Image (cartoon, rainbow over all chains, first blue to last red; front, side, top):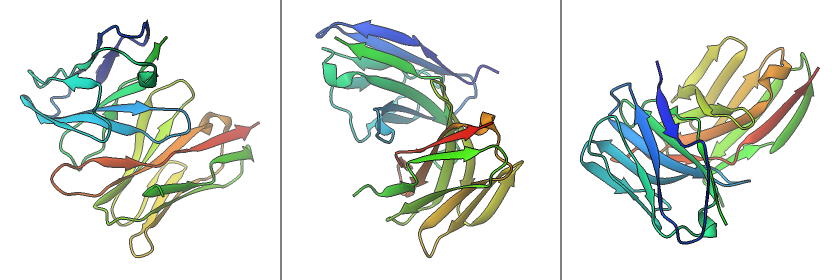
Length: 112
Length: 110
């Protein structure tokens, strides 16, 4: 079982560049989430999805976009990368909103 | 003030010691989660509980809904227990978003 797979694991971007963080899950989970984790801070929710075609903003959505065309995939798009987006990004999924979440291994992103 | 507060922020123990990590929250919740994150690693869900107590191996989680408090205990601690332990609460509603504490860094020395 692969669970939740995130790619890439590491990436360095220049200010103003764009990129897509990939997230895929093979558990047929309806709910998917994107978080960022900054040093000394709790995880913050960026965007979430309750099913294919349905997405909604979390606490810190500015500078990001998502799409959910299939149950399996939930990519996170960064447009015009800024140094403030340097962080570790985690994707997670769950059967329903009140079930434990399964996390990917994270993507460490640096913007210089 | 963060809605979820954990204490202590850092904890160092000797192998074999009994460990307690605390979590207090200020909002009404439908469930509380304990998660584990090893250095440089991913995040694993340990427990989800809405009342009482749960046990898995050497780990025990308790929650007191009236006092808005939960504890995570580790019995007979081992160096492999060294990790960040994160408390998160689900305040329910239609979106089921989690609010996370900042985590407790546990180091168990041999």
